[in-house]
Length: 77
Image 1 (cartoon, rainbow, N blue to C red):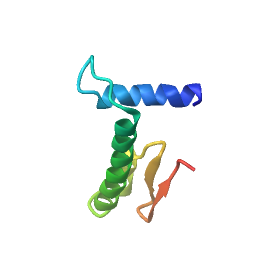
Image 2 (spheres, rainbow, N blue to C red):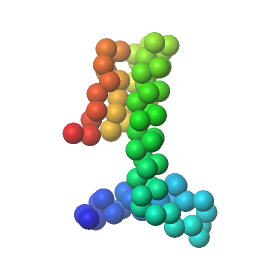
Image 3 (tube, rainbow, N blue to C red):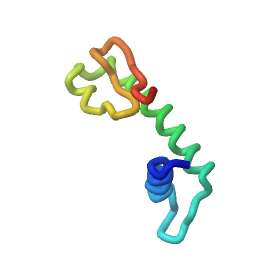
């Protein structure tokens, strides 16, 4: 595992953990990240009909974003 990937995993564990002494398994952290990605995409799809393009683009991330109200693109690959 690269140092950057390990750093991201460690940061995600901090978010998923139930407290200072909790150390969730990597599988739980990955499941949470995947669920978040899917829910974020669904939220963008729902919001595109309710918000103007300038507003909705404020919610874009480095992984997923809405472009010109016409499509949702994955920026990951």
